[in-house]
Amino acid sequence: MAELPKPKPGWQAGKSPIQCHRYMLDNQISCDVAVRFSGSTDVIGAHAYMLMCRSPVFESMFAGNLIRNPGSVISIDLPGVDPEAFKEVLRYIYYDGANVTGRNVISVLHGAKTYQLDGLAAQCMTYLQRNTSAANVCTLLNTCSVEEVVQMCLQYVRNHPAHVLRSAHFLNLNEEALHRLLSVDLVCDRAKVVEAALRWANHERDRLKSTTSPKEASLRDVLGRCFYRLGFTSMTSSQLAAVVKETAILSDVEQLALFRYAAMPDEEVTSSLDALGFSVIPAVYTSPSCYRSLEQRQIPNGGQVSSTLTFILDNNIILQGFTVHGTTKSGTYRLSAELTNSDGLERDLGGVVCKFETKLWSRGSKEPIRMILPTAVELAAVLPYCLRVTMSDIRESASSMYRGVDQMSHVAGDHCTLTLTIDQSEDGGFISQIIYSLR
Image 1 (tube, helix red, strand yellow):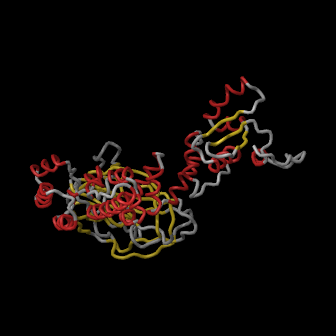
Image 2: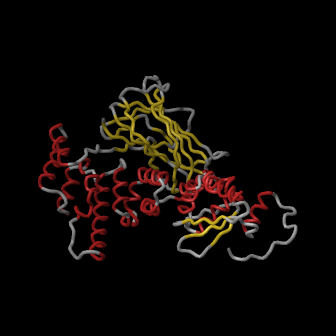
Image 3: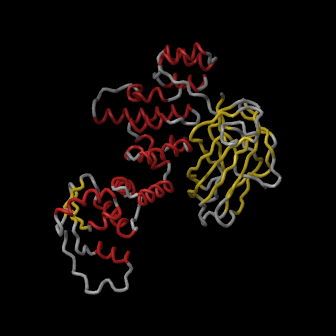
């Protein structure tokens, strides 16, 4: 450990316990732990007492050593750990002062998970939730193995598939990350998924050609196991024709089976697709907006707003999600949703069909924001349903939001019409559309 100037006598005067902890760490006073890192000459001093009282992992690591060697300096090696990130871990342990940034958040999160520092892990996750975007979600899927982060990224992809698929960073996904992304139930136009995957395959083929073998691989070979996750079965005949015309990715037998399915998806054709390895992915529809116009409204003090949408369907559907209008400025806040039916017959929870909480990313745009359910739910025709959504933790900087006004009584979507109950006590709302497939 590097020599530091000796502290002045009486440095403790006027300092709180937390301030003393910080001073001892910053000035490396009486350290009895020396932390070393592989590939680095850095040595960081710490205090076993502080490490043990905040982390059960360090307690288990040091307890026996201190009993056998009282007064000794414990030397530990941390292979694969970034010294700068570990300094933030120590700052959290000593005085809850970790500075989490875009550069260090993943390394700090790994440290928090390794040493069971739940508060620091929560701080890192909050940072990621507030700063995840189409630009960095692909990088996170490529580089981060923390399952909580991976699931957060995949939920972002489900809510914002178009932005992620169009992102230049999508082309830099590795094959494992691409397969994981495609394995998610992407509720969107599958033709866009195929288009993006083919762009990725062309980009990857060029990269492989320049770095490995001059022999050019086929797009299908490059896609590998991702090929069967593209969702050809939910494409229309014209979309399939465009793929067949522009690529040689489908065999004649596969083309025939897919065109037959697009024309008449009966049991025989479905069986032939199963035999060829294709999973049947249902087409997804988005209803028109439930409101005729849109306007800006002030957000009340407290940063929380709620909206309800009560409707009856004329057809059985599988509800995949819904869209909401967000704030007029970009930001991240909490969204909770509950779907109930008034007769109490659906499920066994007093009429609750589903409920969930998640984070909402608003770009400050008038365009509605997609919210995809963690698990799709079946809704029956004729029964009345009520969707209630609450947004909270809205920051003061976002003082207004978009709300729909002049609610319609009927909304006709593809294969399904919603009859809406207009709540006279609620002047407009921010739930705009429902996203669904057919049962």
